Structure formats: C-alpha cells, structure tokens
Amino acid sequence: MTQCCFLRVYLFFWFRSFHHRMALGLCPQVLCSLGGWLSLYISFCRLNKHRSYEWNCRLVTFTHGVLSIGLSAYIGFVDGPWPFTHPGSPNTPLQVHVLCLTLGYFIFDLGWCVYFQSEGALMLAHHTLSILGIIMALVLGESGTEVNAVLFGSEITNPLLQMRWFLRETGHYHSFTGDVVDFLFVALFTGVRIGVGARLLFCEMVSPKPKGFVKVGGVAMYAVSWCFMFSIWRFAWRKSIKKYHAWRSRRREERQLKRNGHLKTR
Image 1 (cartoon, rainbow, N blue to C red):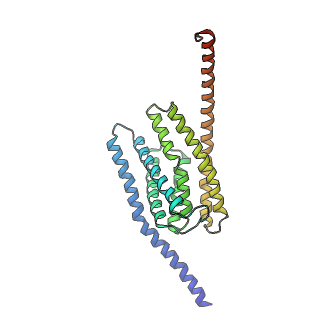
Image 2 (cartoon, one colour):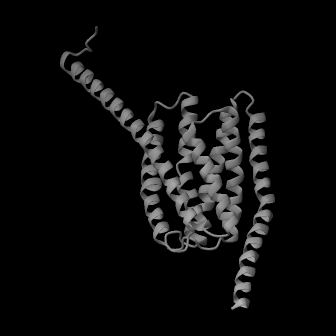
Image 3 (tube, rainbow, N blue to C red):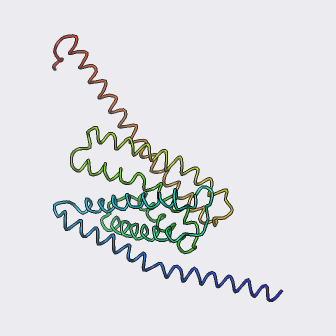
C-alpha cells in the first residue's frame, strides 16, 4: 500500500516536471515566432513608408490569417486527429509548431493593440483568451486538436475582415467587391464560427477527456464569438436596409423616366 502511494506521488511529480520541461522547451519557438512577426511588421513599415502603422499591422494580420487557415485546415482535415471525435487528444508535433507560430502572432498583435489603443475591450478579451488557450494546450500537452479547430474557425473570416478595411482605406468599399466581401464575411462567421463552433463546443463538453478548465475556456471563446455576432448582425441589418431603400429609390426614378421621358427634378 505504501509503495503504491509512493508510486502515485512519484508519477504525479514526474508528469508535472515533464510538462514544465516541455513548456520551457517551447519558449524558443514562441520567441522565434514573435521575432518573425515583429520583423515582418518592420519590413512592411519600411516598404510602405507612405502608409499608416495600422495598414502595415493589418498586412501582418492578413498574412497570419491566410497562413493559419492553411495550416490548421491541413491539421484538421488531413493530418488529424478529427476534433469532433477526439477532443482532449495528445498534441501532435505539427499542432505544437502551429500553436507556437500563432501564439507569437497573438502576443505581437495584442502588444500592438495595447500600445496604439486601436481596439476595444472585446477584441482585447478575444486576444487574451486566445493566448491563454494556446498556452494551456502547450503546457498540458493535450487538447491541441480542438484548439487548432478553434484557430481555424476564428481565422477563416480574418482575411475578409482585413480586405474590408483595405477597401475602405482605398475608397473601393462602396462597390460590388465590397458587397461580396461583406456577404462572405457574414455568411462564414455565422456558418462556421457560430454554427460549426456550437457543434465543436458540444463535442468538447460531452467528452470525458478534456480537462474542466479547458471546457470553461471553450465556453468563454464561444461567448466572445456571440458578442461579435450581435455586432455583425446589426451591421448587416443596417446595410441591408440602406441597400433596399437605395434600390427602391432607383426603381422610382426608372419608372418616372419611362412614364414621362425625363427624371423629376426638384
């Protein structure tokens, strides 16, 4: 009995020490990632001296979005394991590399947002939860499967969001391209981040494998997504009403022109 208790205590502290060593071993990867994103930002600033700091930061954000979508999609759909059936699984080497790459980006972007005070409390909360969630998965050595899936769902709309901002800055937002970007953004956010995200959260909650605080983190991230969703739906409703009134106005003018041969002037 005494030997059994001693063995359990030994294994407990060995696993704690193992995770601690693993976390320390990942620090250089995260620092390299942070340095890489910072170097990319500095390069963009030098290449685009006539542009604002936000322009160049959003270029970095766009780059990370495209890269993380591709990598997380490959992990989820090809390399595996499937997040809906294997939540709480041990991290694979590829998952660890992608999470370190993304952690470095989120640290960079959070620091940039705080320094320039460019974002509100909701975006800062999103970045903070993302950083804590990635660190948690790396330290535990598990749940990288579902964290990677959350990364895919969170980033799939990011390039569209940046394109929308670039279109505004260049004066091309009020065009057919701007309408397409807005439609795809709202559709993907609703379908993937809210719809598929609900399914992923359900699988996470009913599975016995993930730790309790991992599940709490998943609920918190999904709640943040709903906060974003309410703002997006309000925007989509206002824009739809504005487009509808503009369409009705054009129809009246066309009928007036067909009936009288000229537009009514005031």
